Length: 196
Image 1 (cartoon, rainbow, N blue to C red):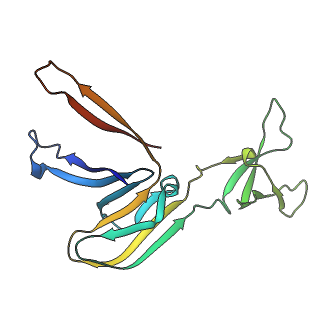
Image 2: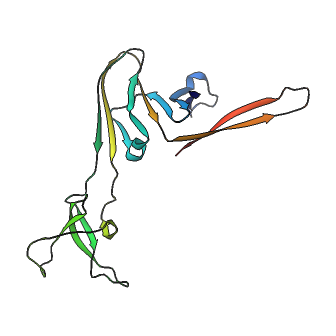
Image 3: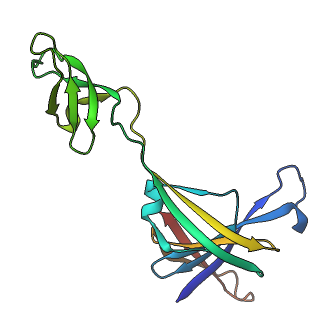
């Protein structure tokens, strides 16, 4: 059930008195009872989504629309930044309540938190052990996965990308304006939309 159909518009900031030509439609938003359909002009490919955004997008709903679009292919790729073979620091087991010591190590398998450590006092060969995630000090900020969507298509007109999102929460608000008895009452309806 379609609840609302909204055009998101941006105004040309160089114009003091906006006209119809000064505005561009950034996206068309169709709000349904439990999701929203986003339709926006297709920009540069591939489209990039953060892991958080991607978790709220129905990947099977991504498509191209337009008056003359021939979609021949679509690829979705996850790019995950790995810390495998990266230098990290690990909290030393010899740390105490008053002093925290860190050991330089190499992450071998981030899924298992397996690290490689060299200590010539113990062995000439590297030592491998697992650590809990709260004992690791990263030199670089751990980056989250990104998702990329690419399309192969032929088109002669403007192309739009359409997809469904499930993280919009909304509730309806009403305002009733009662002026004097000679004027008809005015009922305004609004949707309070939150992108959670």
